[in-house]
Image (cartoon, rainbow, N blue to C red; front, side, top):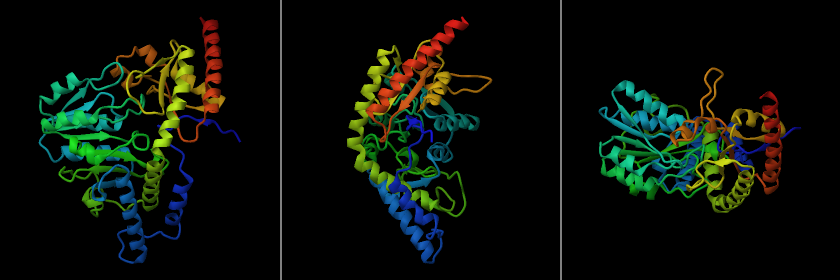
Length: 385
């Protein structure tokens, strides 16, 4: 059976066997509703409570600060829209390189009287501290800055940014979905600096899809997106996805145990990959900034990223394009546009995001295949010129 090499771990990770094993009982014999008063329900509630403690421990939070959601997108929407619903409309600031599940709800709030400011970034994708200070002087009510960018892997100094936002009186949120499991993320420390909420997601760390969490300072008042039976302290009604929540908890424990050794190995693989890419003439985005240990975002002049990704897929390597394409209006990455990257170069962007199952041999094979693929595409281009 054809099995491509998987180099797209920022999109999703393989479910860890230990996670699947922990989930299976709650997909069969342990089927109770956690709100039920009988033993079936109590067993489900105990499982959720344990998972909540595991998730909290992974990010240095208290279990009572963890609000389970269906995904990172829901958690981000809950914070942005939920906080805005409890405040008078004012200024909302998000970085220009946020995931769409932060930018889109922020844009929607403009229809409800809010003003949106997109925080500028420099050429390496770091928030421009000068522009940030200018925006904070205007007293925004909500600020959201991603901890680790999903495309470039570039890290933000959220502690310093949050401290500045705190002096402005803003609620500060960070999307930490890509950071957890790859970096040390400590909500207690971040909270002391002025971070009031962070988002994490199970399927980015070897857990199942369908489980995520908003870690929330209890001083922040939110209006729930989903009203009903009052689950999750009234912040997210709906019968809990017990199996996925259990898997989320186990994935968090495993990610914490493995993080240091995994990060070291991923850095070695990233160094091997980047050296090979530079040797082939690639442009690496965010290269001068501190980045996730597993992420490489690159482009080759005059090569289309979607085309390159398609050829690599057929050759046995699963990677991601940086373009948000549609048949009618192919657009380069909004992250690269915010960084000031030339649109033509941005359209060629390709992301490789490494994971626990990858090896030096796979990276070497990828580089050899990439070199041959580029040469083939360049020949085709020359023939059609």
